[in-house]
Amino acid sequence: GSMLMEYNYLTGESKCLGMFTPHDTTYGGAYDPKNGDYFSITWMRGIGYVYNIHTGAVRCLGQVSDSHTSRLFPCSDGHIYGSTSSGALFRYNTDIRDVEYLGVSAPDLIRHAVEVDGVLYFTTGPCGVFGTGQELYAYELKTRKLTVVGRAVPPAESMTDNPSVYLN
Image (tube, rainbow, N blue to C red; front, side, top):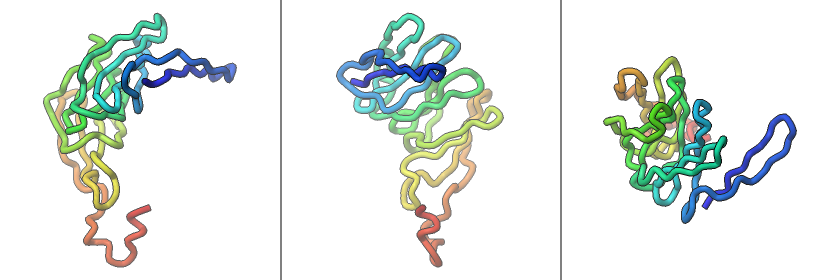
């Protein structure tokens, strides 16, 4: 499992809140300030867990991803977004406090993302030049529309002069 730690910025003190994901480990999570929920997905099995910081209650949401899922992204609409290992987009809906699948998919797990003006921009897969994370996607939070923006990394065959510029 994973040990959940609480850190107080004002005092510099930290304390261990214990293991809230039995039999598996989390690789990342995201905090929902509206409800006090820390939403996380286990790395090996893709099981969703929610730890409430106010009550200490733990909820298991069951299978969220087909396999490992590591990155979650809080967005301006108050929900937390992520994808399954195979690329299906979902969000932890903070209004209903559960996972909902969004009906759109990218070709792989979301690796890097940022939201700008209600659009979640992301890449998938490894981000090296030869990886699958070379396309930039845009997911509109309100319309739930997913589009391919274009290549975020130049194609490997275009790197003739100095390939190390693209690999760093």
